Amino acid sequence: MKRKVLVVGTHRNTRGGITSVIKSHENSQLWSDWNCKWIPTYIDRSTVFKIMYFFRGLFLFLINLPSANLVHIHLSEPTSALRKSIFFRIAKMFNKKIILHFHAFSPDSTIFGKRKELYSKLFNSADIVIVLSSYWKTQVDKIVSNSAKVVVVFNPCPRVKQADNIEKQKFILFAGTLNERKGYSDLIKAFALIAGKFQDWRLVFAGNGDIEAATELSKSLGILNQVEFKGWVSGNEKEKLFAAASVFCLPSYAEGFPMAVLDAWAYGLPVIATPVGGLPDIAVHGENAMIFKPGDIEGLKENLEILLSDKLFREKLRTASLKLSNEIFDIKVIAHQIDELYSTLV
Image 1 (cartoon, one colour):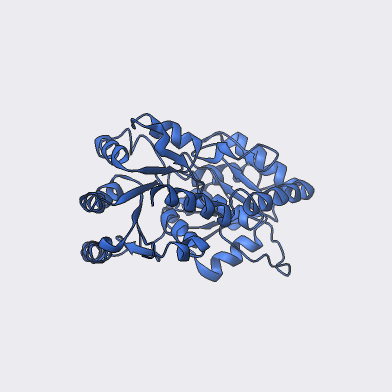
Image 2 (cartoon, rainbow, N blue to C red; image 1 turned 120 degrees about the vertical axis):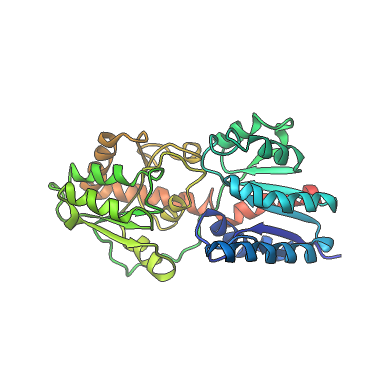
Protein backbone atom coordinates (compact mmCIF):
# COMPACT_ATOMS: atom_id res chain seq x y z
CA MET A 1 0.00 0.00 0.00
CA LYS A 2 1.27 3.45 -0.91
CA ARG A 3 2.37 5.57 2.02
CA LYS A 4 0.18 8.56 2.83
CA VAL A 5 0.58 11.50 5.19
CA LEU A 6 -2.14 14.00 6.06
CA VAL A 7 -0.67 17.46 6.65
CA VAL A 8 -3.06 19.58 8.72
CA GLY A 9 -2.46 23.32 8.59
CA THR A 10 -3.69 26.67 7.28
CA HIS A 11 -5.02 27.47 3.81
CA ARG A 12 -2.31 28.02 1.20
CA ASN A 13 -3.34 31.68 0.76
CA THR A 14 -3.32 32.42 4.50
CA ARG A 15 -0.58 34.70 5.76
CA GLY A 16 1.94 33.35 8.22
CA GLY A 17 4.78 30.96 8.85
CA ILE A 18 2.80 27.72 8.85
CA THR A 19 1.62 28.27 5.28
CA SER A 20 5.15 29.19 4.13
CA VAL A 21 6.63 26.07 5.71
CA ILE A 22 4.04 23.70 4.25
CA LYS A 23 4.49 25.26 0.80
CA SER A 24 8.24 24.63 1.03
CA HIS A 25 7.64 21.00 2.01
CA GLU A 26 5.10 20.68 -0.82
CA ASN A 27 7.79 21.64 -3.33
CA SER A 28 10.27 19.05 -2.04
CA GLN A 29 10.75 15.37 -2.81
CA LEU A 30 9.27 14.59 0.60
CA TRP A 31 5.78 15.50 -0.60
CA SER A 32 5.65 13.02 -3.47
CA ASP A 33 7.62 10.29 -1.69
CA TRP A 34 5.07 10.20 1.12
CA ASN A 35 1.99 11.03 -0.95
CA CYS A 36 1.26 14.00 1.34
CA LYS A 37 -2.18 15.59 1.29
CA TRP A 38 -2.68 19.12 2.59
CA ILE A 39 -5.76 19.46 4.81
CA PRO A 40 -6.38 23.20 5.34
CA THR A 41 -8.47 24.09 8.40
CA TYR A 42 -8.20 27.89 8.58
CA ILE A 43 -8.47 30.77 6.13
CA ASP A 44 -8.24 34.57 6.45
CA ARG A 45 -11.89 35.47 5.92
CA SER A 46 -14.98 36.45 7.90
CA THR A 47 -15.95 34.54 11.04
CA VAL A 48 -18.81 32.72 9.28
CA PHE A 49 -16.51 31.71 6.42
CA LYS A 50 -13.85 30.53 8.88
CA ILE A 51 -16.38 28.26 10.60
CA MET A 52 -17.56 26.85 7.27
CA TYR A 53 -13.99 26.30 6.16
CA PHE A 54 -13.13 24.51 9.38
CA PHE A 55 -15.92 21.99 8.82
CA ARG A 56 -14.85 21.59 5.20
CA GLY A 57 -11.36 20.70 6.45
CA LEU A 58 -12.80 18.30 8.99
CA PHE A 59 -14.83 16.57 6.26
CA LEU A 60 -11.74 16.17 4.05
CA PHE A 61 -9.78 14.89 7.03
CA LEU A 62 -12.37 12.22 7.86
CA ILE A 63 -12.53 11.04 4.25
CA ASN A 64 -8.75 10.68 3.95
CA LEU A 65 -7.87 9.50 7.46
CA PRO A 66 -8.62 5.76 7.09
CA SER A 67 -6.05 5.38 4.29
CA ALA A 68 -3.36 7.54 5.95
CA ASN A 69 -0.26 6.15 7.65
CA LEU A 70 0.35 9.18 9.83
CA VAL A 71 -0.89 12.70 10.53
CA HIS A 72 1.41 15.75 10.60
CA ILE A 73 -0.35 18.61 12.42
CA HIS A 74 0.98 22.18 12.37
CA LEU A 75 -0.14 24.35 15.30
CA SER A 76 0.85 27.57 17.04
CA GLU A 77 -1.03 29.89 19.39
CA PRO A 78 -3.99 28.77 21.60
CA THR A 79 -6.77 29.22 19.01
CA SER A 80 -4.74 27.13 16.59
CA ALA A 81 -4.09 24.48 19.25
CA LEU A 82 -7.81 24.30 20.13
CA ARG A 83 -8.77 23.92 16.50
CA LYS A 84 -6.14 21.26 15.79
CA SER A 85 -6.93 19.34 19.00
CA ILE A 86 -10.15 18.11 17.36
CA PHE A 87 -8.17 16.61 14.47
CA PHE A 88 -5.69 15.22 16.97
CA ARG A 89 -8.37 13.40 18.97
CA ILE A 90 -9.98 11.93 15.86
CA ALA A 91 -6.58 10.69 14.60
CA LYS A 92 -6.01 9.07 17.99
CA MET A 93 -9.38 7.31 17.75
CA PHE A 94 -8.17 5.79 14.48
CA ASN A 95 -4.84 4.79 16.12
CA LYS A 96 -2.83 6.92 13.71
CA LYS A 97 0.74 8.02 14.38
CA ILE A 98 0.84 11.78 14.98
CA ILE A 99 3.55 14.44 14.59
CA LEU A 100 2.86 17.86 16.10
CA HIS A 101 4.80 20.71 14.48
CA PHE A 102 4.90 23.65 16.91
CA HIS A 103 5.23 27.18 15.44
CA ALA A 104 4.34 29.45 18.38
CA PHE A 105 6.24 32.68 19.09
CA SER A 106 5.81 32.93 22.87
CA PRO A 107 5.98 30.29 25.65
CA ASP A 108 4.01 32.57 27.95
CA SER A 109 1.02 32.69 25.61
CA THR A 110 1.11 28.98 24.80
CA ILE A 111 2.76 26.20 26.84
CA PHE A 112 2.93 28.29 30.04
CA GLY A 113 -0.26 30.29 29.44
CA LYS A 114 -3.95 29.73 30.09
CA ARG A 115 -4.01 26.73 27.76
CA LYS A 116 -0.93 25.03 29.17
CA GLU A 117 -2.90 21.90 30.09
CA LEU A 118 -4.07 21.55 26.49
CA TYR A 119 -0.52 21.82 25.13
CA SER A 120 0.77 19.40 27.76
CA LYS A 121 -1.86 16.83 26.90
CA LEU A 122 -1.31 17.17 23.15
CA PHE A 123 2.48 17.03 23.34
CA ASN A 124 2.57 14.09 25.75
CA SER A 125 0.11 12.14 23.60
CA ALA A 126 1.87 12.82 20.29
CA ASP A 127 4.44 10.42 18.87
CA ILE A 128 6.84 13.22 17.87
CA VAL A 129 6.87 16.95 18.58
CA ILE A 130 8.80 19.13 16.12
CA VAL A 131 10.06 22.48 17.44
CA LEU A 132 11.90 25.22 15.58
CA SER A 133 15.03 25.64 17.70
CA SER A 134 16.99 24.44 20.72
CA TYR A 135 15.43 27.29 22.72
CA TRP A 136 11.97 25.90 21.99
CA LYS A 137 13.09 22.35 22.77
CA THR A 138 14.28 23.52 26.19
CA GLN A 139 10.89 25.10 26.82
CA VAL A 140 8.77 22.20 25.55
CA ASP A 141 10.92 19.66 27.43
CA LYS A 142 9.53 21.20 30.62
CA ILE A 143 6.01 19.98 29.90
CA VAL A 144 6.67 16.54 28.36
CA SER A 145 7.51 13.34 30.18
CA ASN A 146 9.72 12.04 27.36
CA SER A 147 12.08 14.71 26.02
CA ALA A 148 13.40 12.31 23.35
CA LYS A 149 10.19 12.80 21.37
CA VAL A 150 10.89 16.57 21.06
CA VAL A 151 12.98 17.13 17.92
CA VAL A 152 14.45 20.33 16.48
CA VAL A 153 13.80 20.88 12.77
CA PHE A 154 14.48 24.34 11.35
CA ASN A 155 12.10 26.07 8.99
CA PRO A 156 13.51 26.06 5.45
CA CYS A 157 14.55 29.08 3.45
CA PRO A 158 12.46 29.56 0.32
CA ARG A 159 14.09 28.76 -2.99
CA VAL A 160 14.64 31.96 -4.93
CA LYS A 161 16.32 32.71 -8.21
CA GLN A 162 19.11 35.21 -7.71
CA ALA A 163 18.72 37.90 -10.38
CA ASP A 164 21.99 39.57 -11.32
CA ASN A 165 20.28 42.37 -13.25
CA ILE A 166 18.37 43.81 -10.26
CA GLU A 167 20.11 46.91 -8.92
CA LYS A 168 20.35 47.20 -5.16
CA GLN A 169 18.60 50.25 -3.76
CA LYS A 170 19.39 52.14 -0.60
CA PHE A 171 16.59 51.01 1.63
CA ILE A 172 16.17 48.94 4.80
CA LEU A 173 13.37 46.42 4.48
CA PHE A 174 11.01 45.37 7.27
CA ALA A 175 8.61 42.52 6.39
CA GLY A 176 5.88 41.41 8.75
CA THR A 177 2.85 42.68 10.61
CA LEU A 178 3.35 46.14 12.06
CA ASN A 179 2.60 45.46 15.71
CA GLU A 180 4.24 45.83 19.09
CA ARG A 181 5.70 42.31 19.10
CA LYS A 182 7.53 42.92 15.83
CA GLY A 183 9.11 46.11 17.17
CA TYR A 184 8.41 48.25 14.11
CA SER A 185 8.41 51.48 16.17
CA ASP A 186 11.92 50.74 17.47
CA LEU A 187 13.16 50.63 13.88
CA ILE A 188 11.54 53.97 13.08
CA LYS A 189 13.00 55.58 16.22
CA ALA A 190 16.48 54.17 15.60
CA PHE A 191 16.52 55.24 11.96
CA ALA A 192 15.37 58.73 12.95
CA LEU A 193 18.61 59.10 14.93
CA ILE A 194 20.72 58.67 11.77
CA ALA A 195 18.34 59.71 8.99
CA GLY A 196 19.99 63.11 8.64
CA LYS A 197 23.38 61.47 8.08
CA PHE A 198 21.96 59.01 5.52
CA GLN A 199 19.51 61.15 3.59
CA ASP A 200 19.73 58.94 0.51
CA TRP A 201 18.52 55.91 2.52
CA ARG A 202 14.94 55.05 3.47
CA LEU A 203 12.86 52.55 5.42
CA VAL A 204 10.40 50.33 3.56
CA PHE A 205 7.71 48.49 5.55
CA ALA A 206 6.06 45.53 3.85
CA GLY A 207 3.16 44.39 6.01
CA ASN A 208 -0.27 45.26 7.33
CA GLY A 209 -1.09 46.31 10.88
CA ASP A 210 -0.54 49.64 12.63
CA ILE A 211 0.32 51.59 9.49
CA GLU A 212 -1.51 54.71 10.63
CA ALA A 213 0.35 54.78 13.96
CA ALA A 214 3.65 54.12 12.20
CA THR A 215 2.95 56.98 9.79
CA GLU A 216 2.21 59.36 12.66
CA LEU A 217 5.39 58.31 14.48
CA SER A 218 7.49 58.86 11.36
CA LYS A 219 5.88 62.25 10.87
CA SER A 220 6.48 63.30 14.48
CA LEU A 221 10.16 62.36 14.15
CA GLY A 222 10.53 64.32 10.92
CA ILE A 223 11.46 61.37 8.69
CA LEU A 224 8.19 60.68 6.87
CA ASN A 225 9.85 61.57 3.56
CA GLN A 226 12.29 58.68 4.14
CA VAL A 227 9.71 56.06 5.13
CA GLU A 228 7.46 54.07 2.81
CA PHE A 229 4.58 51.75 3.70
CA LYS A 230 3.74 49.09 1.12
CA GLY A 231 1.06 47.23 3.04
CA TRP A 232 0.90 43.44 2.76
CA VAL A 233 2.86 42.20 -0.26
CA SER A 234 3.17 38.81 -1.91
CA GLY A 235 4.19 37.18 -5.16
CA ASN A 236 6.21 39.27 -7.60
CA GLU A 237 5.94 42.44 -5.53
CA LYS A 238 7.45 40.69 -2.52
CA GLU A 239 10.21 39.16 -4.64
CA LYS A 240 11.12 42.54 -6.13
CA LEU A 241 11.31 44.19 -2.70
CA PHE A 242 13.60 41.52 -1.23
CA ALA A 243 15.76 41.47 -4.35
CA ALA A 244 16.19 45.27 -4.41
CA ALA A 245 16.73 45.87 -0.67
CA SER A 246 20.22 46.45 0.72
CA VAL A 247 19.51 45.61 4.39
CA PHE A 248 16.82 43.66 6.23
CA CYS A 249 15.77 44.45 9.80
CA LEU A 250 13.40 42.62 12.16
CA PRO A 251 13.50 44.09 15.71
CA SER A 252 11.10 41.54 17.25
CA TYR A 253 10.44 40.94 20.92
CA ALA A 254 9.31 37.33 20.41
CA GLU A 255 9.43 34.78 17.57
CA GLY A 256 9.34 31.09 16.80
CA PHE A 257 11.78 31.14 13.92
CA PRO A 258 10.93 34.19 11.81
CA MET A 259 10.16 33.31 8.20
CA ALA A 260 10.95 36.87 7.18
CA VAL A 261 14.58 36.39 8.26
CA LEU A 262 14.71 33.14 6.28
CA ASP A 263 13.38 35.08 3.27
CA ALA A 264 16.11 37.67 3.79
CA TRP A 265 18.83 35.04 3.97
CA ALA A 266 17.49 33.39 0.81
CA TYR A 267 17.86 36.70 -1.03
CA GLY A 268 21.33 37.27 0.41
CA LEU A 269 20.36 40.27 2.51
CA PRO A 270 22.44 41.46 5.47
CA VAL A 271 20.20 40.93 8.50
CA ILE A 272 19.78 43.00 11.66
CA ALA A 273 17.68 41.18 14.26
CA THR A 274 17.12 40.48 17.92
CA PRO A 275 18.22 37.21 19.60
CA VAL A 276 14.71 35.81 20.09
CA GLY A 277 13.14 32.44 19.35
CA GLY A 278 15.39 30.24 17.24
CA LEU A 279 17.75 32.95 15.98
CA PRO A 280 20.38 32.49 18.76
CA ASP A 281 20.91 28.93 17.46
CA ILE A 282 22.33 30.36 14.25
CA ALA A 283 22.93 34.11 14.30
CA VAL A 284 26.45 35.22 15.26
CA HIS A 285 26.91 38.95 15.65
CA GLY A 286 29.24 40.36 13.03
CA GLU A 287 29.62 37.01 11.27
CA ASN A 288 26.27 36.21 9.67
CA ALA A 289 23.99 38.89 11.17
CA MET A 290 23.96 42.00 13.34
CA ILE A 291 22.32 41.39 16.72
CA PHE A 292 20.93 43.74 19.38
CA LYS A 293 18.71 43.30 22.44
CA PRO A 294 14.95 43.78 22.00
CA GLY A 295 14.01 47.37 22.73
CA ASP A 296 17.61 48.63 22.58
CA ILE A 297 17.09 51.54 20.20
CA GLU A 298 20.64 52.82 20.64
CA GLY A 299 22.02 49.35 19.81
CA LEU A 300 19.82 49.14 16.73
CA LYS A 301 20.95 52.60 15.65
CA GLU A 302 24.59 51.55 15.90
CA ASN A 303 24.01 48.41 13.85
CA LEU A 304 22.17 50.37 11.19
CA GLU A 305 24.94 52.94 11.06
CA ILE A 306 27.61 50.24 10.61
CA LEU A 307 25.82 48.55 7.72
CA LEU A 308 24.75 51.71 5.95
CA SER A 309 28.30 53.08 6.11
CA ASP A 310 30.18 49.98 4.94
CA LYS A 311 29.32 48.39 1.60
CA LEU A 312 32.09 45.80 1.94
CA PHE A 313 30.70 44.66 5.29
CA ARG A 314 27.25 44.40 3.75
CA GLU A 315 28.76 42.16 1.09
CA LYS A 316 30.37 39.97 3.77
CA LEU A 317 27.00 39.45 5.46
CA ARG A 318 25.37 38.85 2.06
CA THR A 319 27.76 35.96 1.46
CA ALA A 320 27.04 34.57 4.93
CA SER A 321 23.28 34.83 4.35
CA LEU A 322 23.46 32.88 1.10
CA LYS A 323 25.62 30.24 2.77
CA LEU A 324 22.99 29.73 5.47
CA SER A 325 20.15 29.46 2.96
CA ASN A 326 22.06 27.00 0.78
CA GLU A 327 23.25 24.74 3.61
CA ILE A 328 21.57 24.58 7.03
CA PHE A 329 18.22 25.93 5.84
CA ASP A 330 18.10 24.28 2.44
CA ILE A 331 14.77 22.50 1.87
CA LYS A 332 16.58 19.32 0.82
CA VAL A 333 18.25 19.15 4.24
CA ILE A 334 15.00 19.89 6.08
CA ALA A 335 12.99 17.43 3.96
CA HIS A 336 15.53 14.68 4.65
CA GLN A 337 15.18 15.27 8.40
CA ILE A 338 11.39 15.01 8.22
CA ASP A 339 11.62 11.96 5.98
CA GLU A 340 13.65 10.23 8.68
CA LEU A 341 11.03 11.15 11.30
CA TYR A 342 8.25 9.77 9.14
CA SER A 343 10.23 6.58 8.61
CA THR A 344 10.64 6.00 12.34
CA LEU A 345 6.86 5.97 12.72
CA VAL A 346 5.83 4.02 9.60
